[in-house]
Amino acid sequence: MSKNLMETEETNRLTRAEEEEEEDDDEDSREAWTEEENEEDGDENDEDLEFLCLFCDFKYSSCDSLFDHCRLTHFFDFNGIRKDLGLDFYGSFKLINCVRSQVADNRCWSCGVRCQSKQDLQSHLHPSVNTKDVKLLLEDDKYLNPFMQEDSLLYSFDGGEEDEDECNTSFEKEDIVKDFGSVCIDDDDTAEETELNAETYNKDKKFVMACPNGHLSLASSSKRITENGMDYGESARSVESEPKDKQSRVYIADVVEKDIKKVNDSYFGSYSSFAIHRDMISDKIRTDAYRQALLKNPSLLNGAVVMDVGCGTGILSLFAAQAGASRVISIEASEKMATVATQIAKDNGLWRSKTDSEGNKSCTGVIEVVNRMVEDLDKSIQIQPHSVDILVSEWMGYCLLYESMLSSVLFARDRWLKPGGAILPDTATIFVAGFGKGGTSLPFWENVYGFNMSYIGKEVVEDAAKFPIVDIINHHDLVTNAAVLQSFDLATMKPDEVDFTATAELEAKNDTLDHKATACYGVVLWFETGFTSRFCKEMPTVLSTSPYTPKTHWSQTILTFREPISVASSKFTADGSAAVGTDACPASKILLRISIARATQHRCIDISLETAGVGSDGLKRSWPVQMFNLT
Image (cartoon, rainbow, N blue to C red; front, side):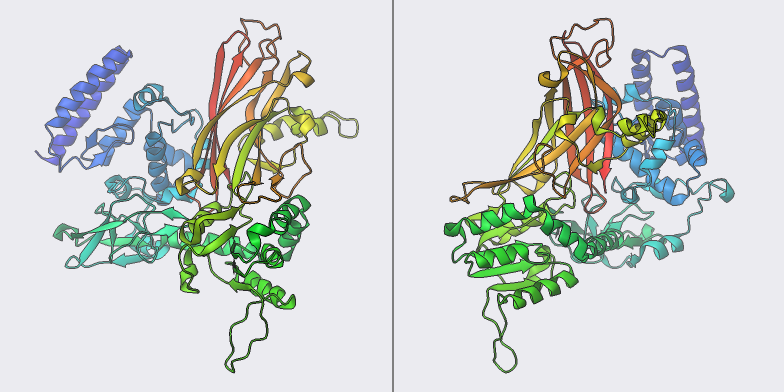
């Protein structure tokens, strides 16, 4: 069957579908139409149906017919969105990957609502009211990574466009090669076809994207790769190249490698600032907790081999040496800070020197500093597996998991810590509570030198709902109880448990509400880490970043609701006809479902927040999901 004939038949099918939808919009009619489409599609030649729909399992022989289908059936006007947002090739490339990613997560590409199933998502899809939110999503460079393996749509959506001025989306292969770097492989060579998605690396940790042939390939054999403690598995298998690919076998490489190197350089470079280390060491809550754990537990430290992951100035290594450790291996990826930590160890007579060319040793201390990421430690020093008695690290970031350093600590634990060895701290817990008006900037704007500027405050709060905020919340501003969101046992947890989804239930605080309704403007997250009696038998301790304890440099992490939720105790007399969460019918409970996961953007985390209110009569109301990226 010719391509033109297929496209004509496809156009006829789409026209019939549109007429059927106009005549009858109910679900039964749509299902019947879908079954008819499936039967017709089943007769097509699979080799001609190259392009998979972004929303369903239909395949099409041309991009135009696919995008017509998406526009008529799924309310997604690809070309219209490109024009509205002025997307170039890369922006359009991101758009396809973004939508595929959202659909795979049963999430609406337009409003962000997550549905229970793929079928529910199909029923939920609606025309986009505002494409600005979509444009914000597309600012994330993670969507430059193909979401779906062998996605031929990514390299063909622009092929039929003759008017380059309309969207400025001219696609030249040479430009892609220049921008991303490439590896070209002759068809006679043996290639490696990756079986993972866009986060796949070769043995040099080089990322490979698919080009027009749709294959993800590597130039050489691949091994199991770990980056920041993330295991990417056996990433490739050998296949032979196909002759038909001779004109298009360009493999875009190094994208993720360059991105990770750039982020790592920036990350470790930021820790070259002495001001940061002064802030951390001056944080008495932080430093005293580690000092107490290391110095007040002599049975643990005496004669022990200690590994300090991310030593910075070496303060924890100094404590460990002072407590009687026989050897302290201090790992620091920042070249500047590794030099500083070495000099500080020397200045305090604690440096473990190596024999010089004349056989002399100037120091006989216990600390040795290694300038490496812990994942690359074997390149600088040989340490016997499972030979370390104690693993210590101050790895915690904002919202506990920002910076993704916990993965590196777990990597070190699994490789070098003895069975039953101590990890300090050994527990970590994330807490959540609801905060009121006092936790926002509204009170400030309500009285500015006697003038009411609350209009500004309202806009500030609305903007705050788009981003996580790291700031101090006073415990007096909490309007609900605190609840445990997630707990980690660092001695036993698996690396993939760093990413989690958990639920929590918040109740209005009876002691402050006095049976009156008050507004909850969002939730605040904080954490505690424990040096428990499991390892610190003489003196266990806790490091807390709670609003109820003295402030630390971590502050708390604030997630603001799009609109405040009115809360009150269950004794409040509610108006049953009003919506739950309003002043007339405040919620007695707020139900939360929160996901925290490492973002594709290196060392950042993504947070999703799903919120529901339950009234005193048991009625429930849910609000649209909110997405936050902590960068």
